[in-house]
Length: 115
Image (tube, rainbow, N blue to C red; front, side):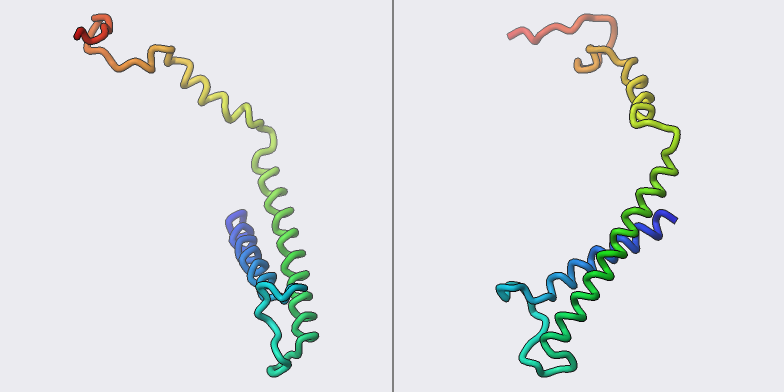
């Protein structure tokens, strides 16, 4: 379930980015939508349709964000971040400060190389 919502969320994010880049900015920056009125939609109709599409995608994006948050909260209920870190800390507690030294072949002490 979480993977399906995550895929929909990613598709909505890409769609939202595309719709925003298609819109004509106030300064005429990256906007490539619209034109001289030739085509099915005029400048005002295109702006209205792109604006509505932006709102729809934005609302759907927020809904999937909230859904993913609720799903993750249910999956991790009763556990803490510290609980998830505790096993890793216990595994690392076996190793002492000597773990930074190279392994030895026996009980001989490590000595610097004589020059």
